[in-house]
Every structure is written in C-alpha cells, then in structure tokens.
Amino acid sequence: MIKPAAFLQTAQEIVLGQVCTGEAAQRTACGRAYYAVYLAYREAIRRQIGDPEYDFLHVEFKKALRNHPEHRVNLLEQYVLSLLRWRIDSDYSPSPLTVQPSDAQRRTVESTTALGLIEELVRTGTQLPVPIKKIRDI
Image (tube, rainbow, N blue to C red):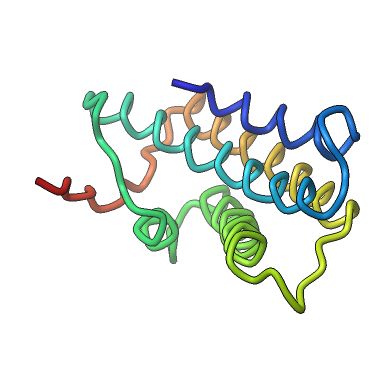
C-alpha cells in the first residue's frame, strides 16, 4: 500500500517540475493532493475503530465531517471539500477548466494543512467522525 504522504510527495514533485510538467501534471497533482488526505483519514479511522479493512466512499467522507461540533474537524471539512472539488474537476472536467501550476500548488498547501489537522486530531485523542462503511461488491 502506498503511504498517504507518498501521494502528497508525488503532487509536490510534479508541481516543482521534478516528474513532469504541463496541465496534465497539474491535474494529477490536484488528485494526489486530495488522495493524501483521504487515505490519511481512512488510516486514522481504521486505527480508531480497530478495523484494518474499513473503507468508505468519498461522498461518505465529506458527509461525516459535516456540521461537526469540533472546530478543527470543521476546518478539515473545508479543506476536504476544496480538494475533492479540484480532484473531480481535474479528472472529469477537461474543459473549459484550465489547471494552472499555481492552482496545483495551492492544493498541495491545502493538503499539507489538512494532513496536519488529521495528525493533530489523532494526537489529541479527538474522536474522528466515522464515515458510513462501504459495502463491498460480491
């Protein structure tokens, strides 16, 4: 399994032109920045509930964070919503959206901040809201 931080590192390398350049790279960076946060949160949930196989859909991730009484979870929600929107737009809206290097760079900053929030929430023992479990296909 790829570590969540590896996705972010890939995004940062792309943004810095170390892997590739161009709009495709910027779109990829937006997606990787989101997945770093999604996977870090999933791992935190798996540890919190003691189920190493627990999985959830992206829509359930954002729903779980909605209207939470903990201020840091609300901040995390804002980053997740922004990152998810950019990930979806980058993957599924090839035009008229143009993803600039500055857009991708902002997503990596958002992702870095969101990862820090997840780490802080875990470190302080905050109960993370658990998204509804994904039902596996047979």
